[in-house]
Picture 1: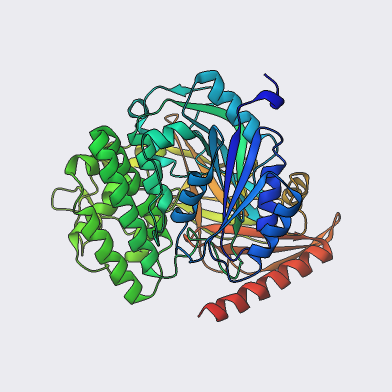
Picture 2: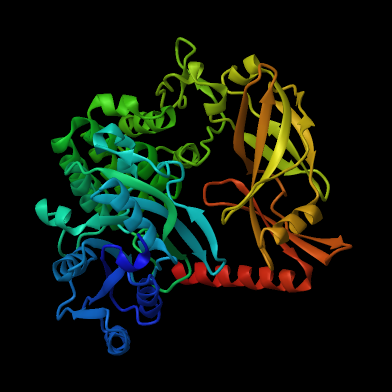
Length: 538
């Protein structure tokens, strides 16, 4: 079967006040070739030039139909429903006005759907960080290329993929089950639609091809819903969407309902907690909302979650207001999780959260070493080295016997990690372990250039610890002392290499490198831009 006789696809593009970007989205859909029989662009009563852009495109592209809504719906669900109603193709594919379909996406999805007679077909998606153009895979490892899932209940972890845009839907399947998005101003409408789809129990086929590029513009004047978390209303909307989705799934299958609630604890809750605003009013409102919702979860679902998520829930339940050490809780919610000292014990010597909140950290004594939320501090040791201190965690690391530590530099926008040479660890008097880890910033900058990182390179800095018993653990570094000072280093290759260590939002060490005078100037300008943006946000 060649592309000229593949079954037809209707691509539904929704747009609101996106005149500058919607043309690229529509063009990427039209460029899919004859497999796309029509592109239906739904203009949700935009007040900018979106209508004009779409009408001009429709005048020269017969496959493009524009639906102009006379009133703004307030959300993404209603315009998508309008697109479904107007579609005539055998399959339906969704596209947002600020994203694109990569070449061959529709072909790959349709071929897989036809081969396996699947009403729903899923492909790979990436979050493309702009303007860097670096791709971060969405839910890596969740889907196996070539896999066919006969029933969603056979793979309950599928509830973690809440996107609707990386999937192809057979239109007859949508019609048969009356599958639509929530109408009106309903944020996180994907959650509910995806739950309704899974509850209908379709066969799901998987292609390994990249089928969707989700553009992430963190500096945009109007950021996307998923990035707009400055107001607690965003969290309230996410909870309500999740509550609705979990109810739909639980009614169809207790297994799927449980998986949805566990996903909330392990993913949604931790994501928002690690980015928790320092504003006391926000924290108090967030804490009350979260505590109230988690109290509705069956105990079995909480017990099914990962240990770090269960400890967070235990602290939530233990106090009606955020604890004094709530920032410590945000570090436990980070990825990888880190439990910062001090380490308190209960009456029987059991690990507890703190002396003020003696909540037991259940199962910590039996967790595999690789899952321990260890903490490693890092201080400067000369111009090209760090002195690290590995804290023991209730004797668990002492049992394993830490032997070496190895620095790891990971591009923040995705890519291959760069590993330094392992260095021997030595016990210190306080019960932890120390080492001085050198690293060659010039060599790191060269590797970054090879990976396509040009004027400015941003790296997460982590450390892997190998133990005498054969176990190992990996974690981020906690910067201490004067480590965050910017340094200008002479370089035979670049003349000058500007290094700016900094602390990420989750409190971990990261590093910006700017090779050469052009790169150094770019880094300084970038820092000034962030400073101005921060003052404006305040």
